[in-house]
Length: 117
Image (cartoon, rainbow, N blue to C red):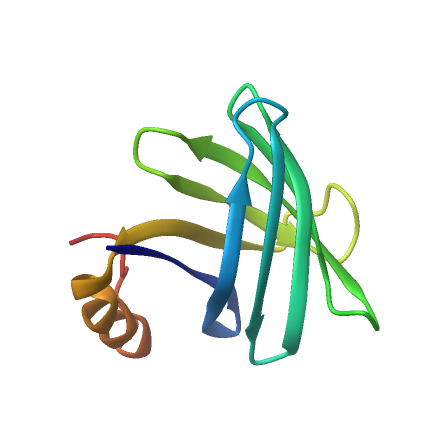
């Protein structure tokens, strides 16, 4: 089995925990529900020609994400910002085997790249 995991950088690396991630390969729609240290969020966006654009909505404020989607690796990488087009800090969202999630979290906490394994 596999699960979607992710992190973003803001002064430190923070984990995103996903309840669900949906990518519609026909329409390019992207939707994810999850939480992080800032609270619960809903991602809504699109993937077109490998380009990823989404808004992470916390209800009280939104964060803009943009980057690239690698369909073969099931990995999204890019930058996020408080304004559309702003490239404040990096993020990664990826689908990984469940047996690697503990390693992912340990690498994240210890400051290593959790996707380098």
